[in-house]
Length: 550
Image (tube, rainbow, N blue to C red):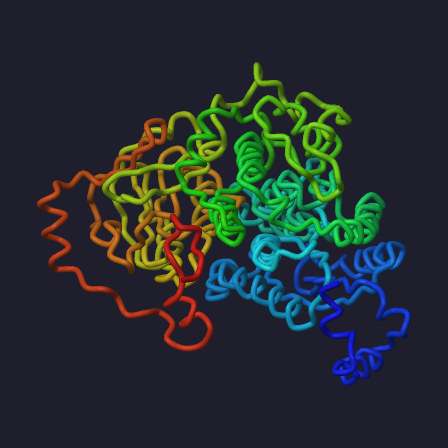
């Protein structure tokens, strides 16, 4: 066992003394040491129920013959961090989490690890950490929140809070109704109800094979989730015994499966960043073109918030991810899951209970998958759009540039009714380095939708978008402005051409004019010059590389 490094031999008397000080017996020292990395915090709705799941994971590890050791991993709620300095931190947190997993497990020579996680950057950070560490590992995601209810209708976090703010400003809903939505939109524990980044990553973790089958959509607080937690604790002991490691599970083929399902579901655009970063840690080359290639070959077969009216609970009741895999079998590779099954074994046991939620290809919502990658003189290295959330009339758009150098400036203009039909809002210096942290633009995009402008106004940025974003919003523009990308020289009034169908994003300027503008361009001063974000800004790479660290 790896843990023998800290528990066997004469020279390890001091180590054993310290281990005994934790309450371990001599018998316990003969067991495999299993880490339980938990991102429990009272600050995040998706995490407040984790104390319960920790107990069931520990129970499973003990039943399997292991010695469980719980340790903490930091978490941030993207929704609470949104729209202020706090949003500079979540993407940067991903790296801290990966480093924490590596540090704790190697310092204590743990034999295996179970990661209890939820929410946007925490799950990919855990996956990056275990892929880098490469000891037996299982991911347990804590599950989606159930829908809220008000006045005989279901509520979703983004639609009924962020977008509702703009509707209230417009006068479409009263202050009283807005207050009710605020209280009822998020009824309890779990990750936000739609196919935003947290739930997308939970689903893709299961598809990759790193969670026990059924975990991705099992609802927060459910008995099913408890059973999965306990089963994961028991199963890790088998992985340790057989020495099955994350890089045996996370392969090129399993990542391709994740992208297929991502496209079919219409998941968050953030998955592009996260899957590339996970691939990097696993030693696998994965580029933007792979996402677009797969998207063109996979139909979009679900309509889940924010791109539709269904919720994660509906996907769960329709059969969960196994049912989605069943629908997509012809597009998938037959790869290994941590529970010992292969993809097609899971498929053969699955049932699709609701074909309105998981549609057949003949009734697909769109012929292509949820994400498209655009190129052009604004984004020579690529840009990303969640095309499943874009209306048909906005798949091609020509508009006037309204340029802002930070999110707050754009938000003020939108809320002050200074953005008009035909405008293309350009938000720059919000990339991985320039932001720093590549802030999500949920507030301005939701405001545009709430003001009724989603079919007449586009938004482009070198930042990124929440999984809750819908409308013609193009992000991840690479190179970013702070690195001298062409988005840096766009001016108010320039004509922006967005053609999602043909994968193009361009400013109507000649090469001569672009070169002329760059001669007068100077890099802006870093927004943050001290602390972790300053170090992160210097080390982070471009969005088209997954915003990994150098």
